[in-house]
Image 1 (cartoon, rainbow, N blue to C red):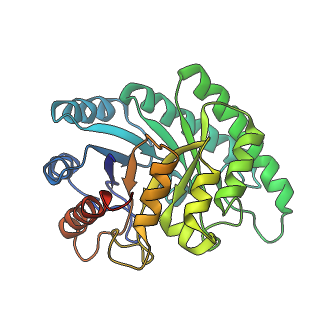
Image 2: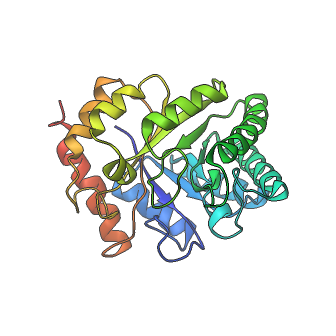
Image 3: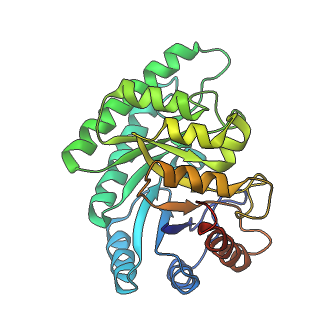
Length: 272
């Protein structure tokens, strides 16, 4: 299993990333703790910064495994399912910028909260059509750039669109791009799924990325999720992708980072 850690410089309190300051220092710590890569969550790409951080990671033999796009929603209100067409188009263009960034870093791009949600006064099917149209536009661009995009299932308290792994899987199939895959997160699965292992197995053919966080959104091992079952299911489907640790920085960033990888390493051999 290869583990990466989420970094989100400048993210607000409550954003699920262990490190939010000192990008280079955080990358160095992650490397020393045994992570093989990072997930870089940011508001919008900057080509110069992309190049310098990419070179820094390369020097440490750390991969930039994924680009997180959620801050485009959190800080700028951009979503693919928004009722305002202008907002939807700006979300598409922002995602295209992230795809350009991913091409430089050889990363995948995550679509999580930027997919949006349906407001009470809108028909859900209409919002899903907005999301479908936006995703098709994004995927046309991603295919030209040869970049993998993953669509994340988020729990009902964050969105009312595609909250389960199975719903997300079916929507991925509906979009119909071989560059679009399913993305699961154990924090959200703990709320929405009846059986995490079975849900992972259902997504076997399209699973492109995995996030781990415990039931309280602390680091794995700090709550009640059975991560042995999760790892067993990933082994059963021969999942070869990165596993990202995307959790809150509690009780302190360094403690969360060390405890997460320490706990997962301790149970990996038992998950057989």
